[in-house]
Length: 126
Image (tube, rainbow, N blue to C red; front, side):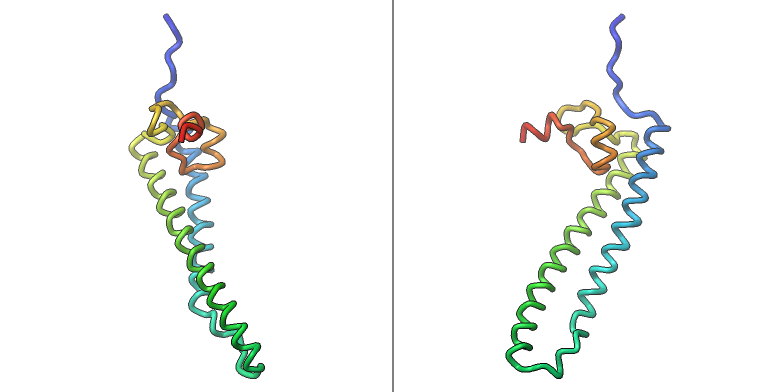
């Protein structure tokens, strides 16, 4: 009889991935709080006593910096959502399945990108 291809990760492997994801989630949430904190406190720069021309330049760079920070915060929120969705897939025991090929995503890839839903084969096809 031919060797059957593995169709899902074992409960032990899923628990290992869950730990990786939970650690990344904790770190990502902490980073998001820092980003949000810097957005709400960005006007504490103390440029009140500087020259008007410098203050105008400072305001322009502050706006750019705020936009960049807001973009980073939005990306971080999306990353957190992707990690939370990966935890749901672990609960459903569908974690690690490529949504295009239906095959298992390589374990090393999942360790690096634990929220991945595409195998490298499918990713390269895009």
